[in-house]
Figure (cartoon, rainbow, N blue to C red):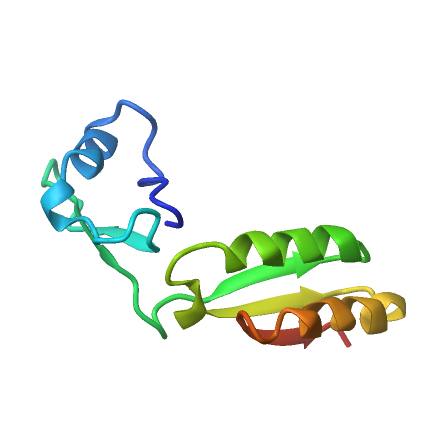
Amino acid sequence: YTNGCGPAAGKGSPEAEAFAASPADAPSSPGALQVATGAGEGGPLKRGLLAAPRLLIVVVAHNKPEELRECLKSLAALPDVAEVPIAVSLDDPPSFARMTDVVLSMAGRLRLDIWKKT
């Protein structure tokens, strides 16, 4: 989960309440990349930082360079994201050059890789 959003369970569910009620296990930096573990049969959830290579962020981009730039800027603003690899998947060959330029412009701030549909 990113930015402390909590588990996929619905709001107000026992899992969500357990996740929100575990401040002792929370990372020290607000908004750090987190994962809920220990869920099962009513057991409590615990929070902990995800560490590379356990996490990969994939951004699927299609011929919208400005939207891709804003997405990558938003990711760059997250705490601890510099440790997480990010793959940008491009699926429109005619826009590869423009989209690649956007990705390369953010390469100094993020761990980026580009995947191109062939």
